[in-house]
Length: 214
Image (cartoon, rainbow, N blue to C red):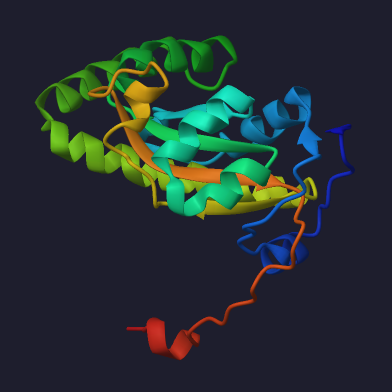
């Protein structure tokens, strides 16, 4: 069964309190490509360093793709096989190549004047030209975490369940799906679908244990 567009939940409190990690999904339920695209679009409203938007998504929903992923994530086979899809989130080490296009679009839409765009581009070209690769990698991993969380909240607003997965072979996943290993840095996998089992509810540490005011 392929899902038609669901009605969105606009209650933020309900979205964040009802999001739990789900590990078993209804394998007959499929999210349409149109709605998956909408979820991804909402996810990409997340912030990123200097708006480079370095995230890249691989939506694995075909039997062949899932079979490949099963071998890379054997301890998370249930999520892979029963979910509507598993979204592999990557960070793009070549993300700065899109900076001019992004800022030119901002100019076209009236978000910034051309002279400011040229000044910013010059500053960023110098900055990222000097930035060590490991520092850039750390930066895009943080951005990848931000977009991943927003993706899971968007999915919940659409009525779907998710599970962030770190237990997979990050050294092989890019090449396994025909992507450049040195360019695409694995962030996490996110399974998505309709829950077939109730999730295990978990507690959180109290704020007075984890926060300070100075």
